[in-house]
Length: 124
Image (cartoon, rainbow, N blue to C red; front, side, top):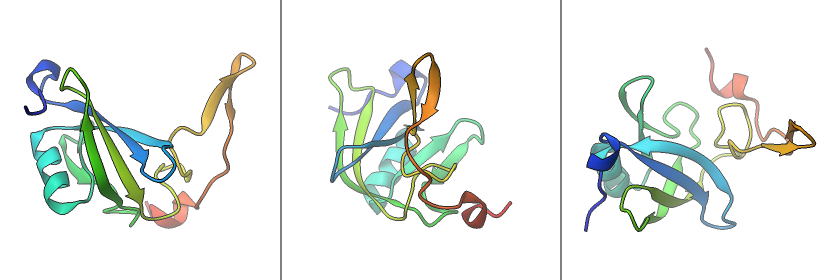
């Protein structure tokens, strides 16, 4: 059994979950090469659809995701990767998780506080 990349045009979603407390940190996409690199290096690598290239989470910020476990769903076309997050946050907006807003009372409300200053990390 292998991951079925052909069903989804060469990319599969990868849900990134904190191995310690099960918080969903982010969702990215992987092609076969990104999955292979993740398995080989232990650092989560994605395929960027907007940049059309591979990228390893943390290569700019230093906030790497260290692979603890890789799971595949019953359709073999979606991954859950349990990680140890190195650094204060995964989100490029400065939060621990990319999921820091919740639909509440008819609007999106911020339900978490920033974990770091993205301007000091992503000097652009």
